[in-house]
Length: 315
Image (cartoon, rainbow, N blue to C red; front, top):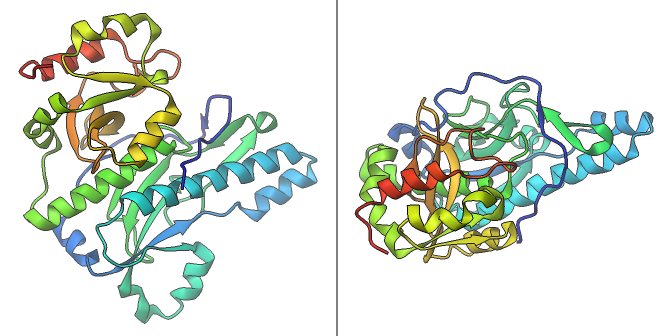
């Protein structure tokens, strides 16, 4: 399934912005072992009927249609990412709405057979569908921060990561699913949590063998010609469509950049192995909203700092 870009033009409005803390902390070994033999269920978020009815009654048919499309695109993108990258569990992945889960778990004795993979809105909490809504004629999505989470039925999630954007982009969904899957398997196999910084450094030699893919939106036009003087390894500037296609193909010859958070520290631009979601490089100085933006793109210091990280690597 091809990942779909979620289309809306204006800047996302965040109604409730929590303090960003502990955004990429590793799950405990006990939690990973708890779910290893359970069957995964991905929660499908349908459009909220009350929202659609409200828009239609107000004559805002455009908002109603765009809202339904945004929700559909998210569900399609989530399914594509999980179907491709989630192989921690050997059992078939199920897809259920919360209403279907309520009926399924009416018999509480079956709950211990499953675990949940889902995204949720911070303001609405982990046990409800998204609080996303449309304004400005369907050009703007508003709501609270969105999180990616894994947990047990009817319990708070034991693992979660914040998204920088309210509506998760297809590439970030793939990153969160693939990288989480990678570390769940790592923790189970090694009986310990990896330190992301140390892990990336230990695997940084992969960068010399891979082509770093940079979305056209990630690179400021003013630095395009300067990249070779900063970054010593192979790279290619590509369209979002090509980037998504390459990551979805799990191309072992390539890596890509995705913004994540290490523990309670600032945002980091991780260099992610397309093959399995493993981090193989990083840059600490480029925090959210500084240079990883669609209007500015990566500045020279991103490539300079990444070049220092790779100083021992040869082209």
